[in-house]
Image 1 (tube, rainbow, N blue to C red):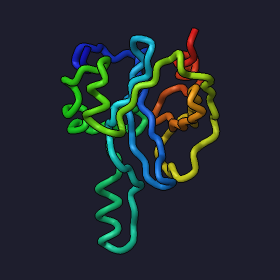
Image 2: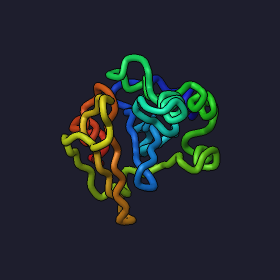
Image 3: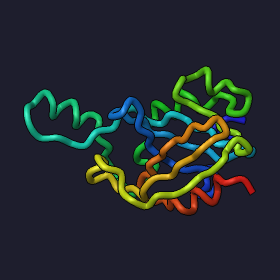
Image 4: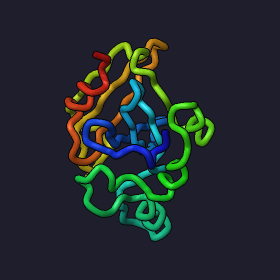
Length: 161
């Protein structure tokens, strides 16, 4: 099954940002299919638009998201999606395509919860707080829910039934 085979609906995916190395971030298209969470890198580093010296402004502005910021898909870049759209999502190939991609079996999820408080540093980017996912390996991941999506609804879709 590839990304092209999936009709994206509100119930089978969400778009979220995750910080790493303290200050860097990446954006994911996260699929909820076949009892798995499949995280696909959908954008690299995102920044707020900046004013100041011309060099810093150019860099920051090139990393900012434009368009309808309430639409979660605005945060995804076409070149990232095209890079993975034909890769099998279920056989592990997606993990070889990029080290940032991930697969979490729902049965490995120990807990998931929603924190509606805003993430510091998100500036004018609209977001619905954070969703935390804790796995059996004692690892907890924090996902910032971008645009007009419900973190509470996402947790309900993530938790194993």
